[in-house]
Length: 357
Ligand SMILES: Cc1cc2nc3c(=O)[nH]c(=O)nc-3n(C[C@H](O)[C@H](O)[C@H](O)COP(=O)(O)O)c2cc1C
Image (cartoon, rainbow, N blue to C red; front, top):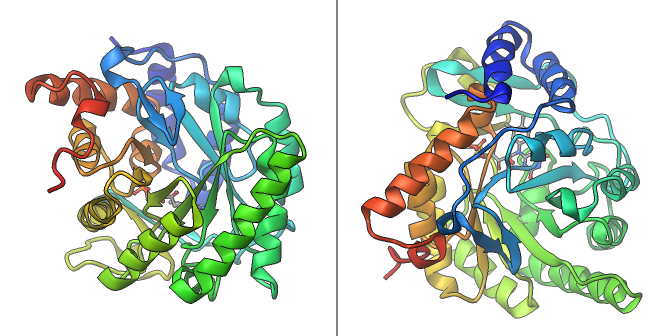
C-alpha cells in the first residue's frame, strides 16, 4: 500500500518534471520541508552502522540534494536513515551560471555542473544546530571555494565550523566542477590535507566537542594506483572511512540523451558499474580498516545489496530518488530485505564484505 508521502510524491514528481531541472529541484526541496512521515520497513536485519554511528537501515541521501540543510527534518521523515547536508564551502558562493543541471531521462541519469552553489559553512552550522540528533543522523559535507588559495587551512576552518553540529564530516575532494579540486586526491596533496583535517578535529574534540567521524569522498574516475594510494593515505591518517563515489567526468558509450554532451559530472544508472568496481577495489585493499559508504547509480535493493557484499556498511542515493520520489525508499528497503533473506544472511552486517576475496 502506498504511504501518504508516497502518494504525494507520485502526484508532485511528474509535475516537477515539466519544469526546468533546477527550478524543479528548488520547488521539490521546499515541498520536502513539509513532507509527512513515511513508514519504511523496519527490521533488525537492516540495522547497520556508519563508522560506529548506529543506523536503522543502510539507506541515506547523498550530498548535493540539500546543500544548505534547509529540508533536513522533512528528508529524515521520508525515512532516510541518514542525510548528508552540503557541500558547503568556507565562504558562500554562487556557483556556475545556469543552466547547470540537466536531466537525461532515457539514461536514468543527471549531468550537473552546479559548482558548489551554497550559503557557506556558518549558515549550514546554524541549520545543523536546529536539527538535533534525536531527529536522525545528519552528516556535513565540506568543499573548497573556487578561488581558494589555501586549501588545507580552508578545509580545516570548514571542518571546525560544522564539527559540533554534524554526526560525521565528509570531505569532498572529488567534485568535477571546481577546477583543480580532484588533484587533492593525489597522495602528495592528500597526506597534508588529511593531517590538517585530523588536527582540526583533535582541536575541536579537545575543546569539549564530541569527536566526529571523518569520511573522504572520492571520484569514480581514479586509476587503480591512485585509488590504492588513497586507501593507504586514509588508513595512515586515521580517518574512519571513504564514500565511493562522486559523479563521473566520463561519458560511457551508449548514452541516449542529448544532454549527455553537457559538461559536468554524470550520475545515475551509467555510474553503477564503475562505482561498484571501485568500491570492490578500495574495500578489498582496506581489509576492514575503513568504513565504506557506497554511492553512484544505486537504483534498487539489488544494487544496495551488491554494494554491501562489496564491503559497504551504508549506501547513498541521489539520482534514482530524484526520478522516483519518496516511494523509492520503501521499495529499495523491501528489495534489500528480500535479497538478504534469499541468500540466508541474518543482517546487513553478516552480508557486508562477503563478496571480497
Ligand atoms: C545535482 C547534483 C548535485 C550534486 N552536488 C554534490 C555536492 O554538492 N557534493 C557532493 O559531494 N556530491 C554532490 N553530488 C554527487 C552525489 O552526492 C552522488 O555522489 C552522485 O550523484 C552519485 O550518486 P547517484 O548516482 O545516486 O546520483 C551531486 C549530484 C547531483 C546529481
